[in-house]
Image 1 (cartoon, rainbow, N blue to C red):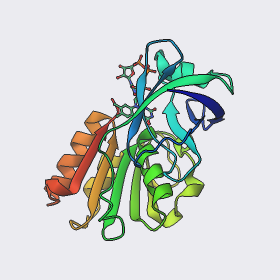
Image 2: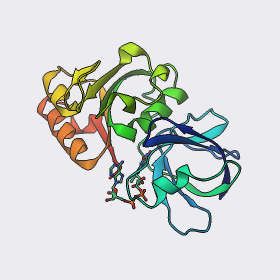
Image 3: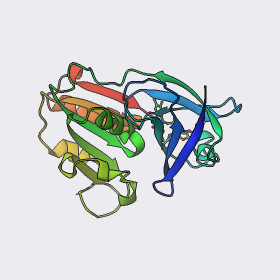
Image 4: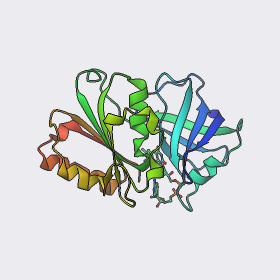
Length: 213
Ligand SMILES: Cc1cc2nc3c(=O)[nH]c(=O)nc-3n(C[C@H](O)[C@H](O)[C@H](O)COP(=O)(O)OP(=O)(O)OC[C@H]3O[C@@H](n4cnc5c(N)ncnc54)[C@H](O)[C@@H]3O)c2cc1C
């Protein structure tokens, strides 16, 4: 399906939010879509960033150096159509649990996208986010999260929050084994975070993962 570009918000030199017309498309927060330039035949998966009740579709995209799709989507003129297929995926919240459990969202970089969608879609969600980034300017749309509900681990500069890798932080803190954990980002971080949680006696049934690369 073709969807017009409504807005491209620059969030840093390498990240942007791509907003498209929704055209009544339904999805569950946490799912992803395949996006690509019109008639290019090349597309990539992107997690939905907007909420289930927003009247637009939005994606949080990091421009990968020398990548094919992520830099080109940033240059699409407003009003132009891009190709979209989906939704796909099962990295979603069980509707029965939405107001019953505490969620811990663990992510690096643009891996925060599905959690942004969860929180916009379910305003009463009881959540904590642990967000691993390299630099302070990778804190995307932080005003949308409750300041007490997000911990930032910054690895490459000393600033606010925890100085170090997300996995170092996770190793140091106590975790509530009754919480439900969602981990999203690169495969190595997911594997490490998973092992740390299992080492802290979190059941494998309470851990859900989504790898971006
Ligand atoms: C289920 C799923 C959901 C995804 N959701 C998002 C999302 O919400 N936002 C987002 O920005 N990306 C997301 N991705 C990654 C995205 O699909 C692309 O892989 C990414 O945009 C690179 O595509 P490209 O064509 O620009 O680069 P390519 O030409 O395909 O690849 C260039 C190289 O960059 C590596 N790479 C891919 N992503 C990154 C990254 N973030 N940082 C560093 N290196 C990387 C690839 O492994 C590859 O080696 C998701 C991937 C999956 C599988």
